[in-house]
Length: 260
Ligand SMILES: [Zn+2]
Ligand SMILES: [Zn+2]
Image (cartoon, rainbow, N blue to C red; front, side, top):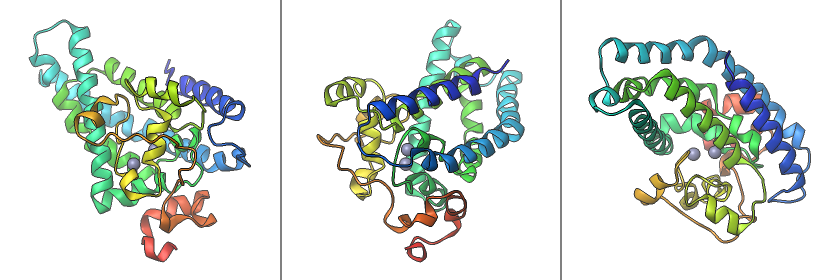
């Protein structure tokens, strides 16, 4: 039985509930209305992942097994060690993939649909355009083969990634001290709030998904004392029509200047 959807639904429900009681940014209105297009998109992405992308992943893992290919097989170490190494490489790859999404116009057109949300909360973690999902899944096929990651390790990585993505997008008010401790190890909500800022220099920081190490190592780590005044979203996609489901789906095919 695939537990992943149930873990994610439980984590989302819990975080969404807690955001309502302990919010970082106060006075949020219409949280459910804001969540609806993201939930609808999650259903579409779940369908695409289940039908097409699951097969692609399964094929890539099978290929590296059949050909005894991949770093995890080349290193002669017990399987928990090689599993951990594969997960670390995958997390580092996800960091660079995210940077590429901000660097190259074609990728940015899809990724900016995620950034156009003007009210970031846990449901923003479901706001990834299907185009971005397909592109990221196709581009990671060689990485799966190169790491030689097994299905179990990939399953663990994906559950950790999805749950922590819900957490770092959340509007949970952890308090500055707790957030500082969290970001010593993993991406904290304050770190990711800076990444969703309208200010370009802030947006071009904090790209990592799980370990904060990658941002620290590659010079993109950024902190800010007061993150409650950050303005989320993009200059070109602030209008109401880009926030809803249809606008979100169409936005990769619109030029930012036309959208204003
Ligand atoms: Zn981004
Ligand atoms: Zn994000």
